[in-house]
Image (tube, rainbow, N blue to C red; front, side):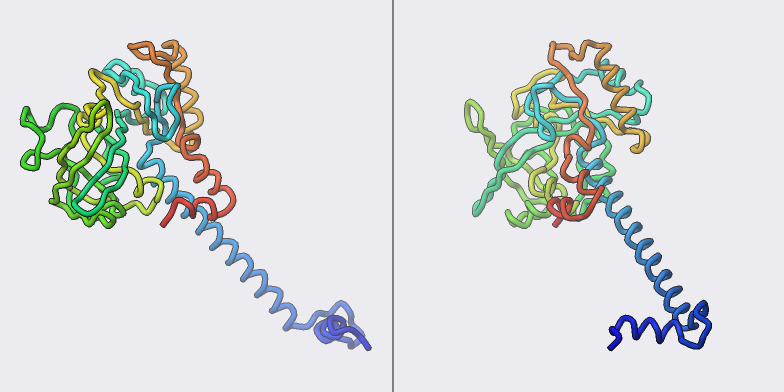
Length: 298
């Protein structure tokens, strides 16, 4: 007895003496199969590219394209300061491929309400910070005017005179916070310091790496919590003109640091860290599948 595949092949090919002739249904099936296959491939490529651009935009939007940090720190959360003065900012702005330069400072603390508490990172940013990404992902309230000087203008910090704070939707849900609420933060150093904050806005990026960890405050406040004075910051963030040329721009930045002996005004050794190096699991996952990046997404 002929096998079933052979039976089907003979029925499709025909057995009327002309073995070069293929039946019309077979041709139609073949064309339809190729068309469906191409359509699936096009949709798959479009989805992957869209996912890649979305993830890249969110990671770079929150963490910038390139960071200048202390060589003794580990990205993406630097814990050793560098001096970022006006002269360094001007040098960085003059590097080919650099679009914008902004300072930032990271401080660790605990947000506490009457019923719960949460350990978070406070990212302090100054007036030059590009807040378009935060504004695009703000779901409640508004962004304050971030400052590198005391925003209270000499007033003692209290519930009546709080600092401004932007939290993620994850934090707001866990601590049952809404815009306008007063929340206290505790910072542990030589002694425990309590700071009053007013929730000005709530953001949501759907990137767990950020939403679970970071809230945004003034550069001045984060510096004070770390007991850093003068121009000391966690680092400088660089936005590039063309992300496709980020490797070349990072090389240009590295060469500029070499010309300055890789040191700031206080002798700290500087290194440049591109966003792919700061968040390698997410960017590595974009080249193959969504499984790795799924770890970073809600």
